[in-house]
Amino acid sequence: MDHFRAMRLRHVKYILYLLAIYTLGFGWTPYKTAFLSLILGTSIGLLIIWNLSWKIEKFGQAVTARKKVRTLGTLTRFSLAALAAVIAWAYPRYFAPVPTIVGLMTSYLVIVIDFLFHKWKHDKPHESEVNDDGA
Image (cartoon, rainbow, N blue to C red; front, top):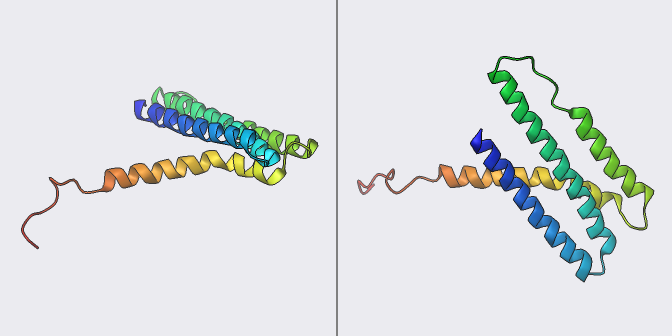
């Protein structure tokens, strides 16, 4: 489970870096609506991923203890995504729907990129595994 926690903290760190970049973009560029929408979507996406990882950890503990397994909170995650969409449509002067949805998907993109990076990093053959028979 320590590996899972380390992975979760790594994802949160990457998403917080992206939020910092979006905040700089909001402050220094004329694209205020787009960056504010990305901040909204990514922030709620972070809440969704945090909720999901917390539920998965509790799910794993329940399975290990052979207890009854509860739901993973799909309705909660859908409600948070709907909240982001409602905020974007309710305040079109400040938020745009498309960047908000892109922001919601950013956390999943971070997970996929992190997975691919770590798979590439751990699948590379080490020099000790390479056969040096000249072939």
